[in-house]
Length: 399
Image (tube, rainbow, N blue to C red; front, side, top):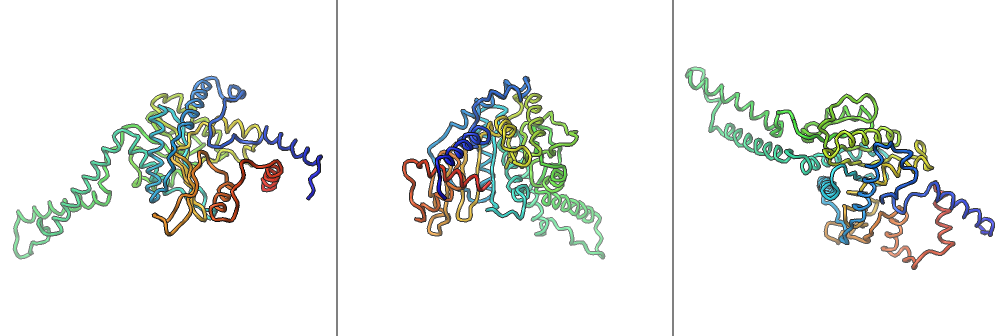
C-alpha cells in the first residue's frame, strides 16, 4: 500500500478527532483531571465530594514504590493480598475511598462469564476484607475456631469411650447410667452440629456490614443460598436495579461485583446515595471486575468519557491479576506492575521478565514476551512517525 500525502493528512484528521472524543487517558487506571463537564453531570450535592475523591485518587495513585509485585501462591493468597491492599488504601486515604480489584484467570476462555469464573475468588476476597476491615469480625472468627476445636476434642473423647454412651445391657438396668448415657447422647448430637457448622456462632450479627451488589437479582439470590456458610455474618447481598428494601444504615463497605455498563446508572446512584447518607461511616467502595463502559451500551464517545471520568478514573487500583497463555500480569498497590513467564527452572515455576509503573496494553504485553524470548528486537528510544501511524491503523482495523 502506498501512502500519499493526502491520505496521511486524512488519517491525521481522523486521529485528532479520535483523540478528542475516544481516547482514554494515558492509562485507564490513572485518575482523571477534573473536567469542565463535571458540574453539569454530577448534582451539586455530590460535586464537592466528587472533587475531593478525584484529588484523593490522584494522590493515592501517585503513591508508588519501586518494589515489583510478586505472584500469589494460590487463589486464597490472591484474595488475601487484594483485601489487605484495599484496607491499606482506606487507611491511607481515609473514609469513602474508592478502589478497584481486577481478577481474570480465564486466559481468553469465554466458556464462563466473568461473574461465574471469579465467584470463588470473590467469596474469599470478601471474607478476607471483612476480617481486616470490619471491627469484631476477626474476634468472632477466632472464637468460632476455638469453639470448633473444643467441640472436636470433646467429640473425640466420646468416640474413644471415655464417656461411653453405648455400654448399657438390656438385662442390667441402671437408672443412673441410663440418664447419664441419655445426656451424653444429647451432648454428642450437639457437638456434631457444632462441627458441621464449623463452629459458627448462631447469634445474629449486629455490627457494621459489608454489602455486595450483584448485577441481577438471580445472582444475588444464589449467593444468599450458597455463600452464607462461606462468608462472615457481616456480609449482606443485594442486586443492581429493582426495588431496594434492604436496611443499609449499617453498611460500612460496599462492593460492586462485576458491574456492567447496563447497571452504570444504578451503580452511580447507589454510590452517591450511600456516600451522602453514611458519610465517614462508609470506609470504602470496591468494584471487582468493573465493565461500566461498553460500545454497545454507553459507547466510547462523550457519554462514555463522562462516565469514565465520574466513576472509573477515580478508582484506585488496589489489585490486578490476569493470567496469560504463557504467564501472568499482576500488581498490588502501591507496587509496580510485573509480567511473569512460566519457567520450570525458576522457583515457583515463574520468572519475572518486566516491571513497569503502569498497566501495559495487550500488544505491549505480547511484545514484552517476544523480546524476552528473542522473537522481536528491543524498540529504539522512540517510535518513528510511520511506525506510530501504522500502529494506529492496525489498532483501528481491529475495532
